[in-house]
Length: 346
Image 1 (spheres, rainbow, N blue to C red):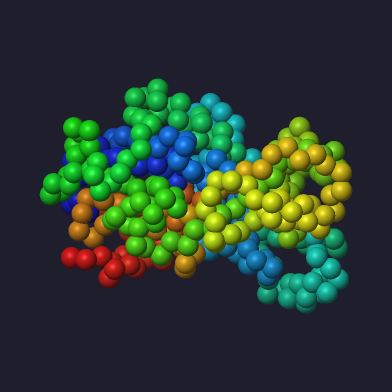
Image 2: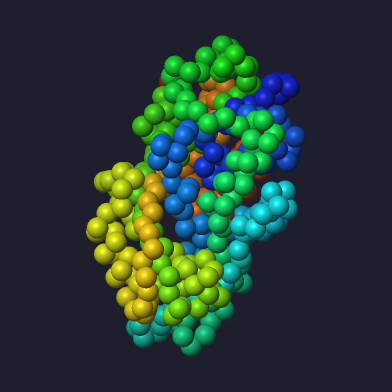
């Protein structure tokens, strides 16, 4: 990592959700940067993301990791970004988790005293989760792309790090421009194509979503029961999601379609029209923690590994990445790639 933060820009590779959030964070801080993104023929997960943010996790309704820090940062960040981009894509919305059955209801209520927290509201039918909602990731990415293009700091091009980047001491050259640091935000592609960070503990997971139209469900909240039903407006919904660790193709599968139909059945939805299927590969990790930080020997960095929680994790860790870059703070030890420095050759 550079000790001298001079006026050279940084190069961000990847304009999925992670790269876009990091780019806006640098933009707000006045840090010069240039952003490149591969053509859409390169499969990306962000455009197929459900985009849900949820402060609790699991059947025990436990607070998500770092939730208080993340959510105190999440709301003002996206609200301000909507103003910057003159667009609407941030949708706070309650989430309802009905009891799966009487046995689960009794199990939860017996443990309520130890489970309860400020994000939960208990009823006879189930538990409401406050401060949840969803981000229209597709809209955010498209508006952001236009914003960066207008500022002439965006280029659509596929980069092959081993051949396209020339490292010389504390700087990197790309297309005759000198950069202080290159930040990789490639999602799951890093495991296959990145010679500098591909050996980290990625555990990508393919997910598939179904978009439907129906007059039956409420459009006022997200329904979560063995899957989710997310209202998009105009009586359209996203249904998700599936997980596979053995197939990273961008083609929808019959098995996932059947699985999602079963989820709809378990959600009590019987009358609907299937509109389309979408697929993505989550850039998840084996320890379920992000990969954020700096190469121990080269002017390179990574901002990746956010899995299915990128909407809530990215703004906070973009701020932490910037703080460490400016020598004003340090990335949380559970997310920092310092935990893998022993894997890097000297």
